[in-house]
Image (cartoon, rainbow, N blue to C red):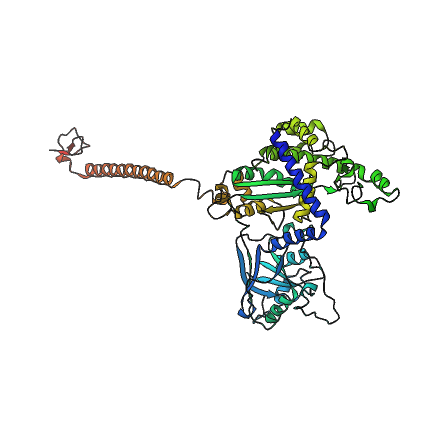
Length: 544
């Protein structure tokens, strides 16, 4: 049975989630305000400023939008000269570096390092930034080409009959941006136009892209929003466990397994009476929702993309609840959850396929390997609301409510200290961001050892804090080095002395031979002694 402490916590969670949901349902503007707050908070973490010429410097920096791909330098900045490509950079060509502004005399390519400004339009943001990265840009500024309606009082359109744009563009990943490592910003038209004009005069512009540390804390909080069957995060779930354990009590992790609301999508009538028209609901439930949802259509998930997959959305919702229970039982209190990481890695390796995804024996075996008690997990599933009856499940409902508050749209997503990370969900991106989230001096040892181990963070953590590229320099301590050097000197000195002594003996023997050969025979001590002219004692002293 679940302990009273856990039940109390779950009831508190239920009260919190239902209260939040009531506010969201009663006030649509409040929902938008929350989402806007999340969006604005994500942009307050970065800064866009022009330092040269001074007449383009804006106090506090320029309003801008961060791309949701690429890897920003949290706690750092890029300050370089700016080139204007005078194109959309939709087509990759090295010849592009020969054009643009300021013009060079003699004519030549853009000289790195530099930041590149490109026009918006004609292709995706990802494609533009990728091509800019290929030609050597350290960062990219997308110059917006349309006025926003909320900037109507300060933005002048290129054509008088051009209508303003009601919504600002979202610089989202189109699904292919995992290879992009440079950061990029969107600069609004009223700000970008004067910058382009300055560059077209062949004047130098020096621009800075900066990122604050992620709301520095003594204890960093990091979260992962994901779906159970996402192949993009399977490697992360296996690789990050050593880092989570090494961060220990210095950081708190929270996983969020996302399911979607069956009420709002028509799989359960709920409070939305307008969708209950004739037999439509029954048809939808029969053909689509039964295999996608639990709790009579309340919580749903999309099945895998593979056409021949035997895994259903219902299976995914059940696994999501299972993992939420494992986290609540084994990770909620300490924020580390070693058993949770073990279970996810074991499940992905043994059970995450058509044959065993919903196989109870495989699932329980994965739990036992991870030191998870299957009975406790089953008890948690049932006491939080189960997945069969037409009623709320506390844990699944909480995750649905939280994703509405957070404003998460694109999955997977990771947050550090409530700030959404840019770039892919991989080991290096998350580890570096977590380490950047600590206040100065509060970094755990694993961060000081591996945080600056560029491109080798995973290897460093797996080796216990030893950076592969620095292993030669750091292989021995200074004490061991000095002792080894002293022993080496003694050995070499002894060998040298022995060689010197041997050479002296050889020289003496040669001299004796020469003297014995050339001295007159009459000088010999006796006629019988034909080899030695003189006699010597044991210390090579002549005996008269």
